Length: 164
Image 1 (cartoon, one colour):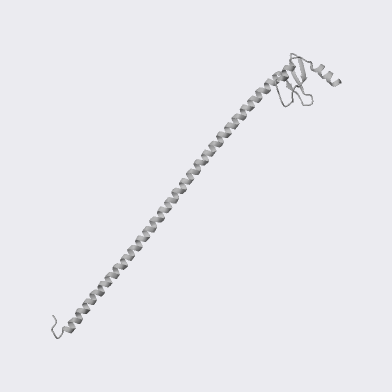
Image 2 (cartoon, rainbow, N blue to C red):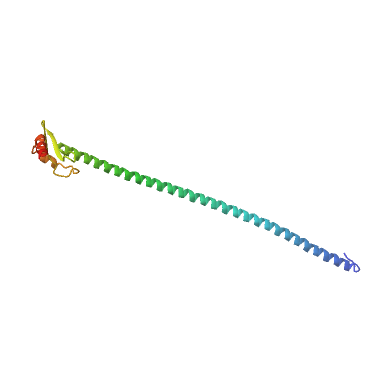
């Protein structure tokens, strides 16, 4: 305890101790503030890393979805093209078969020969019968056979037509 005579010195010491406590308190508060700033900086870094990871994952998912959609669209396009080509091939084959069948019918009844002669002809029991084509050469039609069935001899027909 301080005596009366030392009272002024004691007061100075008490004030100094109080100031020291305040100073130490300020230091502690400063250290806590610095630690809090470090913690907040770490939090910001973690948040930035999490955001970057989420963005990268979302971009990867979007790219995968786009690639899958493009592949599906390409597969659909290829299937449609294959189906259309198959339909066209079948149609062309059917047309070719029909044309071949029509040509066989025309040949069975007779056919138009070269464009210069334009004659229907048919081999019929050792005799070749012929008549002028009733239609254009490009239009192969069984009508040609109807005229042949009338039975005009080729040699007579050509000899008569050439001498005129």
